[in-house]
Image (cartoon, rainbow, N blue to C red; front, side):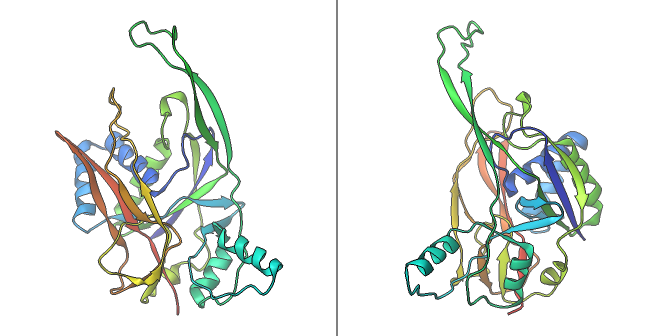
Length: 297
């Protein structure tokens, strides 16, 4: 079962959401709407290689049109003049393409440059004053600036292997907020269900040896990296745990959305759920399951 959800922001966000942000919101939702036992059982299914669902990265969405990460592929182009060089440089800097362009890449190997799109994100800087926790005043405190982001609507695709999780995941996303500074009103949105991109199902069900990932993904032993094209993202983030002190996760390395991988075995998903922090009874996990769309070539 494939479902699509659209997030319509109602406030600024502390950071731009990622696949792990969405997964974290679902986990907190399970914890508060169901129970800690239900969350533990759900995480165990991911750790044991039996995920009930996988999710895409947040994808820009506007008036029913889906926007996908630029598919990474080597296209041998030698610019003949300055104008062609400018066009090629612009092409190399693309981050987003329409679903129609992405679908064409899945249907046939690209041999020339393709059109790209931009995602409009407005960034603001909000000044804050440091608080003296002994006097609970700002006396003697200094100002610091905090970046925030105003996002256009975006969507995620969720593929369910266990359909009983569909109403729970939807309820969790309706219940949760995304990212940091939730207590100050950030990360709020209105959730709507919508239609997945037209024709996407055939690239999920008809598996081949070459896949494009539409979510952040940890390395998988089934990847033939020497015959793949990908970008890497190194990340170290803080734990959203409500503790009085800041706790940092271990550093992780992702293949980014849009990465193209040659695979040894055709599977419904790649990557894993990793434990990135163990402190006493506290275990923290990072989501890194790749959502593959298989090329037809």
